[in-house]
Amino acid sequence: ETGVTQTPRHLVMGMTNKKSLKCEQHLGHNAMYWYKQSAKKPLELMFVYSLEERVENNSVPSRFSPECPNSSHLFLHLHTLQPEDSALYLCASSRQGPGGAFFGQGTRLTVV
Amino acid sequence: KQEVTQIPAALSVPEGENLVLNCSFTDSAIYNLQWFRQDPGKGLTSLLLIQSSQREQTSGRLNASLDKSSGRSTLYIAASQPGDSATYLCAVRPMDSNYQLIWGAGTKLIIKP
Figure 1 (cartoon, rainbow over the protein chains, first blue to last red):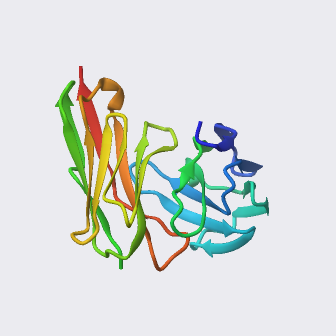
Figure 2: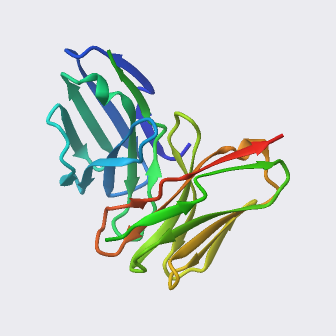
């Protein structure tokens, strides 16, 4: 248990579906992150939210839409995904600056 | 531009051995360095966090050191066990960003029974 909880753990969706990934942290952190990890590739930072404001968006396609309603919750809304979007999606949280990052267990997404 | 390198990329050792994983970084202006463990298909588990003012951190059989001036960190695992088999990642938080983590590519460790 890391204090960061992701749901669902596994998700299979068709290319025309709309689904959402959820992340929740109760560590008192003020920054939350979405990462993508594809097979045999390094972690890719997708989005960063700090104090509920999006502060980084690393050229992620618009079919991925993040939402941060408060400092404890982060969502990733998915629509019209492609098979190459199949990956492990990881949520993390931290304090700004010298704080360490803590990760959830990830959502294994398969797009069929 | 900060770059993080981990050597070796893979390591296989018999159970019971002590071992060292290496992480090097090119810019010493960091807030901290963090070691993580990742089991296949799972999330990342934070093992040790070393702030830039610290030299080492210990947790159980794990000891991580930081030499900021030379841009190096080592993760020492004592008396290795098959359950230690995983990919170990290091990441630095540069001082020019409140949010970025710069990642190494990881070391895949296999402990043979």
